[in-house]
Amino acid sequence: MILAGVLLLFALILPALPLGSWQPFALDTAQFAFLLSGLALSWDLLARTGQLSLAHGAFFGLGAYTAALAAPALGTLPALLAGGVVAAAGSFLLGLATLRLHGMYFAIATLAFSEVMRTFVLKAGFTGGSIGMIVAPPFDGRFPLGGYYLAVTVLGLCVLTSYLVSRSRLSYAMAAIRQGEAVARVLGVPVVRVKLVAFLLSSALAGLAGGVYGMKTLFLSPYDAFSLGRAVEALVIPIFGGLYTTTGPLVGGLLLVGLETWLRLRIGEGYLVVYGVLLILAILFLPRGLVGWFSRRRGGRHA
Amino acid sequence: MKLTVSDLTAGYAKAQVLFGMSLELGQGELVAVLGANGAGKTTTLRAISGLIRPWGGEIRLDGQSLAGLSAARRAALGLGHVPEGRQLFPLMSVEENLLLGAAFLAWERRQESLEFTYALFPRLSERRGQLAGTLSGGEQQMLAIGRALMGRPRILMVDEPSLGLSPKLAEEVLATLARIKAEGMGVLLVEQNVALSLEVADRAYVVEHGKVVLAGPAQELAQDERVQKAYLAL
Image (cartoon, rainbow over all chains, first blue to last red; front, side, top):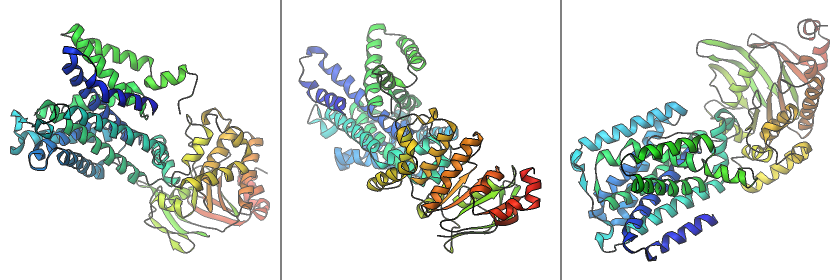
């Protein structure tokens, strides 16, 4: 939590640092890193119940499209909230149908959901279909740093939720479900209800992050907003950083986006090959992520 | 609190396992359900705790039917279940395992439960920081029982606690069940180890092919010729 505070402070003063001509680029990259870390934190929240979701790209996209469509009528902040609510509503429907499924089967169902959502947005008239849609900047562009600070806020919210959940009664219930659902049931854990709460929280946060993302890129297309790549990033980051923790997805997200950007600048074409190799190495040699590696080096046991 | 199971039928898919299982358990009583592998003992426990839905028959707690209640609801009503094979969380510490057993209790009550469980199992208290997977078999079984006690059940169902334990450890584990009984709980013990169970139990049911074939006070059953022949190898 101290680390999160330091990072937050850094995020707040970053726009004031003398970066010269690099500043716009640094802020843009940081904003993207914050949103992806937020998405990763939200994914991890659900993963704590043992459910592997491939629908987080879709929740992200749902939030992005809803916020973009609602912003002209409602204003920026209510529109973002609406994005979170719509994403949560989507997860509620999906959850009712699928939360009794386990592991692989749940993952496949969420994958199907995300494809259905993309097809829907592709075919529906009001979304601009495959051409995509133009998104207004937050607060009608009155504050140049508005989008940046919205991303900081969303990330802060994700960190706070993740931390509070890990300190609450829910965390025990989640850990029990993850490690043995039948035992959790006889120990008195209302399994489906806990999963549903985790799913709702998780998707609402993903939707919020998506909303800010849309207002950052100023343009949305179904291929980008609902891409499977985003769903994969949402799970790669926590695995790289350390599953079921707050620090893991947070640090993992910032580092991975930083690394990816740096490689793109240094190597240019084909940088994803190097990025992929580094990820594979990380998974081979850091089976419990950065957090697990650090706590082992300190001689402590990761709880 | 009194548990009554009457004429229970249940099974998996098309394979019927229970054919009219009946039993009773009162507070402060240790009752053993004995029988060979596949007789339906575990299935009975799973039906009582709500892990499977029975096909027919009734399960009542203090006269109130449990039909339609979720496993979590039944646990909250006071049914504790120590599943077969312990099912611990091996990569978590002893204390974390115990706390997981009280996931639905408020914080203050959880601390109370922890003290109660440690008082009953001092050995767990000594090892509270150790990973559950590194405990000995007997300690693991005690942890599984302790974890179920964390939810403050009034009836505790224990499935094959002696499985995989040396005779001495098995005896130790079954002796702890007698201490739990002394705390006023009802204990339903499912066991294949007939001789040992009859030593600690007040009453026992002998189960064959999904129903009770013999019932009575443990001492009487230990003397019964049929029991001696079939299960005690005397």
